[in-house]
Image: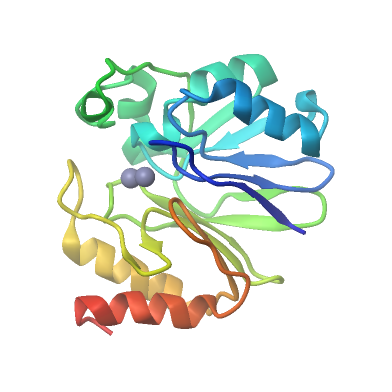
Length: 213
Ligand SMILES: [Zn+2]
Ligand SMILES: [Zn+2]
C-alpha cells in the first residue's frame, strides 16, 4: 500500500504517510494528538526514518502539529510559498488557529512552488499547485499508480471552502478541474473518507454540486 492514513481525531485533519524506503508524512493535524500520531507512525516505520513533512496548506488543523513532529522526527517541513509566511509565523488569523481557540505556533519551513517531486523509493509524488481553498494549497499526485492527495481542495462528497482568508472561488473551481483531468483512481482528502477506486468520478460529483462540471 502506497498510502497509509490516520483518520483525523477531533479537529485534526487526516494524516497520511506515503510509504517506501524514504517515507513522507502529509499533514500533521492540530498537534493536540501528538503522542497518538507518533505511536501510529512507530507502528508503520522506524520513527527516525520520516525525514520529510509536506503540508497541503496553511490551516491549523493541518499544520498545528508540524513543530512538535519536526522536532521529534528531525524532519524538514515543506509548504507552498504562498502559505509559507502564515505557517512560519504561526499567524493565528491566517492559519485559523484562533478559530480553534489557540494562539498558533510557528515552524521553520522550506518553500515549494509546485512541480517538486517527493520520491519514497517506490512511488514518486509530484506537487501540483491547486490554489483556491487557500492561496498556497497544493495536491500530491502519483502518476503511475494514479493516486491523489488533494488536501482540502476536494473531498468525497464536496469541495473545500473558498470563503476563508486567501480563499478564491474561481481558483478553487479551476484547481478542482485540473485534478479531475488527472483522472485519479485513489483519492485521499484532508478530511472525511478516502476512496481506493473511482477517484475521478468522485471529483466529478463534487464539481456537479457546484454546477461547474
Ligand atoms: Zn482542513
Ligand atoms: Zn483547510
